[in-house]
Image (cartoon, rainbow, N blue to C red):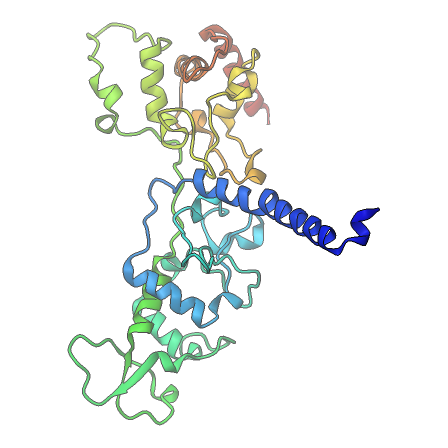
Length: 342
């Protein structure tokens, strides 16, 4: 074949294949994830000090021994309140156009995982001591000391942070040990590493729910029509909206959408009902969080469950069959009987 005899054609073909594969297998998927994955509602961007501290963290090679990823395995339970999901890293951005040091998930865990270190060890004094000499606070630590992040001063300024190091770890230092700007920034970064709690499906207080608050109070003695679209919308806002959002599209990388959901559109509502009552963890492998048993946790009545299901089945372009209170009561009673018999 001519391609094997012409080195220019062979080179161009190989280069084109390499560039094409790189675009379709790496660049385009990464761009799409970056554009669609959104931060968790309660997450906060890094402060200026924490951003500078992240640079120190990278410079000192801390990522070589510390990971920032809680896996969905029992041995990782000590590092966070839940497994990490894609949305946990949504606020992280490239250092610059040439360097992609956005997430520092790491691949080794010689030292503890740092995903939630800001909550596990919030003490500023402990963090400074640990950096100066880890053995001063953890006798068996194998972490190297970072004394160059500190300086000795005979007369510190009032704004200086003086680290009270035990005498046995001062190694001949006679003055005061003061944290440098790098040490302060690094500790600020470590303290910013706090795992955000996922919404637990508990009802939103009524005064925060504009839909429910705007509804007129019913006269005493009347029976609420819990299966109406208005009530379904209000109940959805109270119990489901924190995760799946008002537009039903969820949060990419955190909570799956209900819009165009096969479960919601299914003519048989049993799976839809079961997920509301018992929760769901079937999409953890896709990066979504575990859904709590909202119906059980919030003691929802069959009428309320039917209202929520009907709202989800007929909103955002969904064309699912409406359920009746009678069939939901039957499923509700079956669920109750199954739990009692265990």
